Length: 408
Image (cartoon, rainbow, N blue to C red):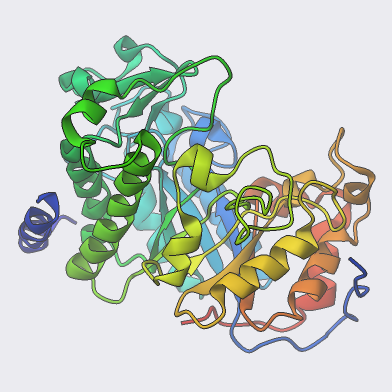
């Protein structure tokens, strides 16, 4: 499986990196674009979507994965985004990081099969694209390094680690961390013909009230050329994005790079270029992720803002955000897809709009008004399979009557 020549090529490549009103749903069978993103996320962190629990036999894990792929193909989706590095671990035989504990229940234990290799092959056999989803900096959803595998890089390099909000993170401000996480992620790109590399919304962690992300030492060492710590942090994330884009093309030319950020860049009350929203989190200010620049400068091939709100929601209206993101993407080479909160359909505690099985279908109808919107991705695979209140069935009936290829 491992090819020494490609591994050498990977290492050589990395050496250069270190230095309002809305329409009703469309009628059933409506013909849509011949090429559009119809994607689904398969989350492995905390066994959210797959495997259903840790420690299943390899055959059972494989059968569950195949069932998700079969369901995607049956629903006339065309892309699966599989989380393969949820917590600084791996769902493939990585020489850099341990096997994920979400497979066997014990981090570092070989599951006896190759999930990523199998996923790529089986997805392609069904006419599906496979996008490999990585989380760059999250180490663990707990704060005890002693619970990590003995060989874990975070235990070998404790100076790379920041405890924050009851979790462990790699410090994005350290160049050696940035080089390592790229090396770990690009190993999978070198080894497997994935169609794209995918990041989600986690860069610097979401704010936790009363806590400080302790990167004082790194800022003292590397922050002199910046006007503020916030500007330095944004540059750290920008640098990761730019370097990763270059690394992907050097390791496997033609592989795309996409990111799915939190849906609000900045509120207009903060920045006149921002959206007409009142979100409590702004990616630019709180996660230090300048998502608007990544699109405008075409540093990434596609973006999937997580527009996880209903049409008409006061603080973050899906309609207003779809319009804002379309205007950001207009005239750029960056493809725009919209992230859809299928998980909210019928869920307790959600606004009444989410109890209506037509809400998501209305999203697709509204988005179709914007030529910049080239498709949608649904969170997540569990809800695609369970189809709460029939919301996904309504989307398929109204919009996915025919198969479509993903945009290239």
